[in-house]
Image 1: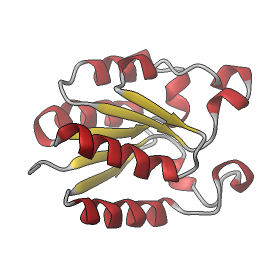
Image 2: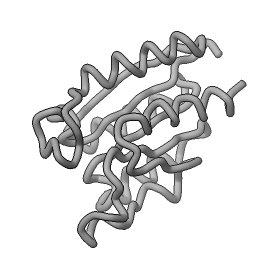
Image 3: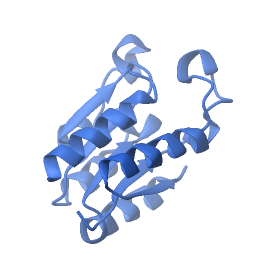
Length: 145
């Protein structure tokens, strides 16, 4: 698998470890990325990381992934609940995408219980903390081999 798996994080995920630690945990995004990279190395794949608080940047990165990545792990943050454009970007690429949410969106406020993006994804992992990224990585690696 020569192309990397893109790990794409949306709005406010740069605040992990600081933002609502009771909901999202104490681990920073940098720490999460280090754990993902270590697991990717064990699995014999490469990963690329990108985080943005801007919807258009995320969409551009998804479009580019069609040619540069083997698959995508996407934590769309709050855009999961509002962005048809992000959903359409995922649907437009021919590589598999797994959506990840650190918190259990189904146990949260009513407006968070629906992800517009999910229907365009190969699968969704929600509520398993940052371990969800590792599970998504393992799934994509198995799927792509």
